[in-house]
Image: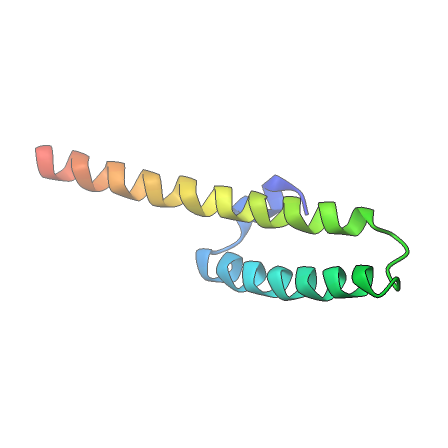
Length: 74
């Protein structure tokens, strides 16, 4: 998933997608432990996707806090 795709998503959708990817990561780790996972690069890709989505959520929350502070100071 590309960063521009994540930025276009709604916050609720991102949160739901993070939860889904976390479940997917658990399944991939299990498959890797029992030697069923042939493409181990998927682990890294899923972790990066989760990190991208969390970064976008953090940026959005930081912008909201800044807007609130600007509104209070005016």
